[in-house]
View (cartoon, rainbow, N blue to C red):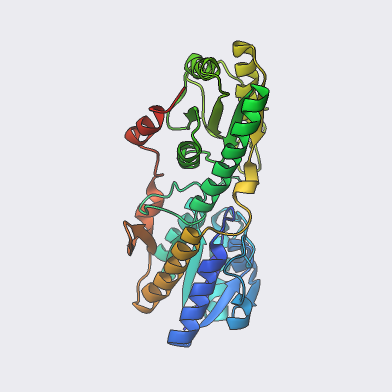
Length: 341
Ligand code: F6P
């Protein structure tokens, strides 16, 4: 069978493990031919391909990023996009497509499946906010990076008697902040799901100083204050309408410094969380997703996504996976709150 594969949206550690698993299993068990599309849907639109044989995936398991490249190109936003995609697939004799991506990439996959393309999606987001799967690969690695940063910031914060505000990724969901903050012993964790009270944050910081230590505040890039009295960014947005990274952490640090009368510094972890080698958990999850995608293709499935439920890899409808985001439930946040202050 000739199977097309692509990676779309923001990169994250584990993408290469999926690609490797699809190529290795497809070739070894089914004699498949795997065609890689460069830079997500752009490669499909433009027919930009690379042959993915065994040599192409040798040594890529521990490598971060994606050997196929990625982009946020959406064929449905391009002139004649869907027609060009169908034409490329037809011309190259692609019988099934395995797109690896988040909400946007899999949203395109859902629409193509409705148009008759055989599609088996693989979920990917560093933010862990895709519905229908317990975890996405890349998340565990990002949490590890953020936790290590918090561990290091505790010692420098305590030495200088300063507040350290650590801004982590998470535009709509606070999973990285919640897990990294819990693992790193943060004194306050702020997430987009729960608008925060500035007075409460300041009170926790004061309390921490009074106990002889310095506060660590972990904040998701998408967190917002309740009362709106905190200017969170320059207002700058990227080409996709997303608020740029770096606003809330700095704004919060300035405010905490002013209100506690002690120095505060902001650290924006940004893309460091997305780069580098995947953790063991992410390598295994990504590999299992890749293997399961090949099984689904050969079982004649379409319009499905492979997903993690407990310890099992299952298949779920693509449309359900992209219908809504998986947000942090109130009871999970309440567990972290026990350690605030
Ligand atoms: O959606 C994943 C994500 O990492 C977000 O947490 C972050 O806001 C965004 O991507 C960053 O996107 P870019 O790499 O385009 O700056």
